[in-house]
Image (cartoon, rainbow, N blue to C red; front, side):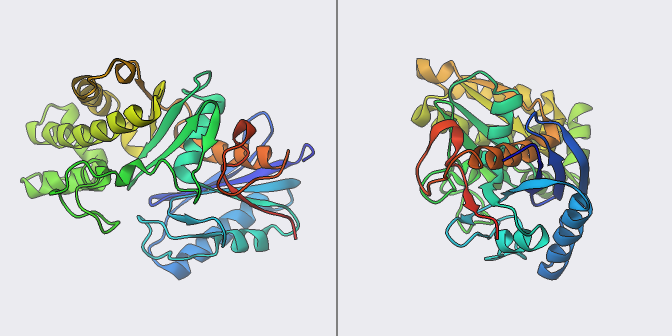
Length: 322
């Protein structure tokens, strides 16, 4: 691809973000919109956002990061935390908005990990797990310097690792998943069930910051579940680092202090204890940058479905222009 920009898109349960990203990672024309709750409104919001950002720009590729699961063969998405989208033809829709350029689809957790590995808190490490803690919990793996999507493109889905088989039901249909404890809505729900009168995760974090015992207990329970998922993944994948972003990570030490404490307590093997847990350096732009990076790498060579390739080139589905 030449010096044209990548139209990068990051779709999650809370927001849809888009921007133009250069080969150096510089973002321009960044815009966001809240994620609507109906399929019709979702489609219209996506089209309006992409059209406004792309208008008049020289675009060489489109990089799409979406919550999953993804169907990499069909180019469709069925995000667990966006119930209105089931088998939504995301690649086709984006290709219709910006015709004539290749479109690359990647999971939002993998995109966040790739972004952090490229320009953020994972830069320079060999193997890392990126986690997005927000409306849901997404994850993505970079192993030996290469994004690892797995055969279906959905590897790294730490939010749906079961940490308590007898635990609460999860939106994925399972029980006791990390997400059922540690997502923002899950911690809020637990606190409300125990008498907290607040409305959302931001208020919960504020109350925890003021030392409210119930709010602190909600974060303690949520981070314990997240720590169990992290330790299990580090044991399996021999990770150097875990990088955590997403809206709930803005709570800072309210989230990271108990999380690191639980990781230290649960990590019994030496190679797991060396895994560090760090906050995102890229914040809300990690997914956008990872989507752009994936599209840039895909433009340098073929993307093979279901295998990992040099420099992360196989971390996505790419549909050619036209």
